[in-house]
Image (cartoon, rainbow over all chains, first blue to last red; front, side, top):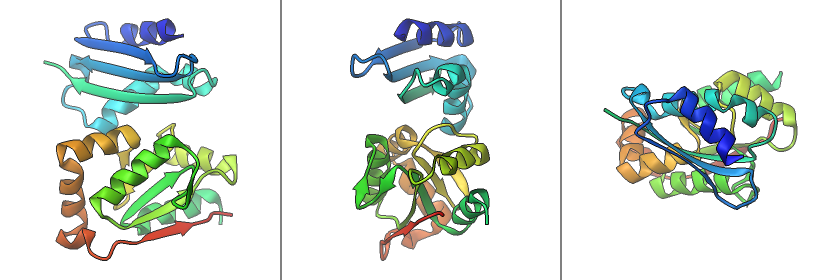
Length: 76
Length: 119
């Protein structure tokens, strides 16, 4: 499942300078996502997190993701 | 009054509104706990709403805010974010700055917690 999320994020942020998906519990439904990308530059944290929620809308809606932690940064 | 109306009035009227799973006395989710604790450390008064009594509360809240997860923290009517953002803002000192800007210097005087039940 981490791979699927990684793929979705990679497609949305192909030029990310940092992109990591960690399975926090090993159970395949609690994830920590880290994204640093130029596309996030200039956005507020709320806007940055909204972008991640948009990209992961499907796994969030279908219950694949039970818990999501997000860390984002705009990179140069 | 629909949930949406009730949610909107809490968001509009509370200086700081925290929509969470459970209550401050019995927190039912680790992320809600993280957000609550960060707000407590900031010393600000918080109005909390438990979203668990009815799944519809959470649905109506997310429709209104455009934010899919719980918790959600609002300051003076504006969404500040969930647990990750609140903790991050706390660590950079921006949480205190935001609270001071929006609520005034005395935001940490006379701290209280008010629990609102929607039904």
